[in-house]
Image 1 (cartoon, helix red, strand yellow):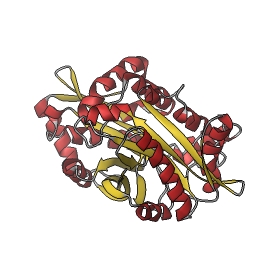
Image 2 (image 1 turned 135 degrees about the vertical axis):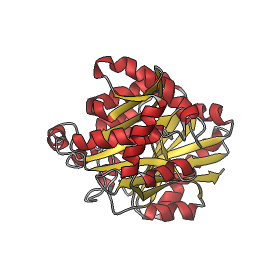
Image 3 (image 1 turned 60 degrees about the horizontal axis):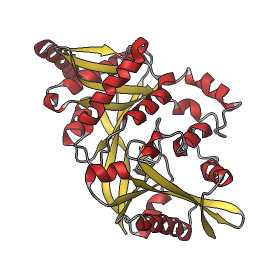
Length: 368
């Protein structure tokens, strides 16, 4: 067996191709478009790499690919947290502990050479992208921008000596009816505090993205592991998501002319993407477009409120908006998350709103 660094386009294609072979026949895994994966991994196309670097590795044995991993140095994380934490991500592996150990060792060695003292992950490539290893909820498919992995990955991590750093909880809706107390509370809060809600204005999309820039980093700044998004990263994300955005499902909360919170919910495009097992643009995109018309699942991707307005009911207003508008557009199931396991306020609010935890992702640490 050989663990080799990705050094050219042919190696990168092997790195990208492995999951499509590895998960062939798995009814839960969702193949993303290969062109999107290539963009995510490319320093020339992904603005994440303006403040980070990564080395990709591929494991091969007997002429076939048996695993892959990325080692990642994120300078933005180091500046925000003043630590020596490096990251690994894009981990995929056959069910052989020896292969997994070789992949982890290779990533750890690269991170040590960057003078980093902890290996954390999986982050693919950061906490603002797909992150965490699925440790509970293996019987359900992932939603858009959420990872999927087989149960044996947990054992591979435990065998290597990884320890839990943090769990991320994901919630699903249990009914199409909002609790009546939430409906009443939303009306009272809006009237008493002079808070108004409005949908995204697609005609002013660029200006609306600027509002998100101003809100996002302030609303999430104290969260564990949070790394501020740069303007370029937010622009890049907005460009990628614009084709699937439903304006009614992006909501801004305003008070006295100031935007104080926002929520973003997206149709779960994974429902359509799973019908294109090769992940190739042609002819697979035709199937994706066909099935995209039949999506009835929704993921609440973001919900944030400025610190001065937290615990004031603004989050309930935003949920109420997303819920009612989602139903009006034919969405009958929703996912909320992820949420940090120790964010009691958000986890309690989710339960009160009629959600229940149904998946758990884990972020691991390993001392170097």
